[in-house]
Image 1 (tube, rainbow, N blue to C red):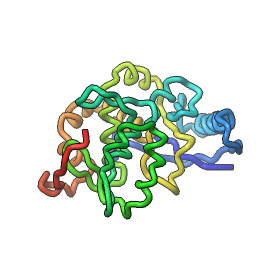
Image 2 (spheres, helix red, strand yellow; image 1 turned 180 degrees about the horizontal axis):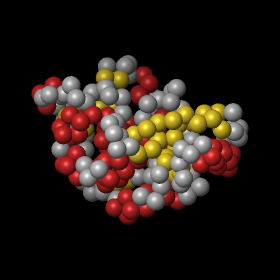
Image 3 (cartoon, rainbow, N blue to C red; image 1 turned 45 degrees about the vertical axis):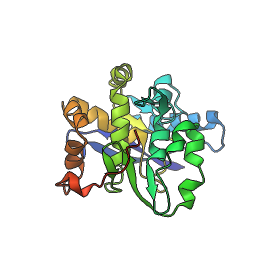
Image 4 (cartoon, one colour; image 1 turned 135 degrees about the vertical axis):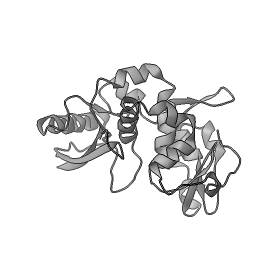
Length: 229
């Protein structure tokens, strides 16, 4: 047995609900094994009334939509016209005690960006460099959600497709090892979309930060460095 969270849109703060679901795990590194585990997870979600139409959001999804929504495949167009995967944006934005942001990670594959040795050899993570300035580490998903929301919002074809689903999973995400999850960010997007809040929030990162980090009262608290994107 294994457990993974299912994320669902909510009309109350923090606009996402999270429930751990136990299911039969199919061991093995093959994609087919992961997909069997996804099927087991989704069956449990439906059987326990946590969702009617769940969507796996990862490269192991059985649906092309779920694969397209993976951070490895969801693309962001940079000001120079180049398109890079969201995963590259996230990894390249990291600032450590002894290095970063490593902007050259925008030029490699998403997998190479995630595995770059500097991400583990540069000391503690202290922030994220965005075009708005340096983002804090708390709340833990603040920056990742922001870049995911923006990337998804720029692809209205995907936005239309996701509205047929009510619950979201990522079979690769283990909450005991990491915080950020593309399935959570997707559920958050749907909540904000249905609440009519998404456009106003994405127009200004300050508005977004105030909503999800109420203690932030001034942009002056967020120092600025050279813009990453």
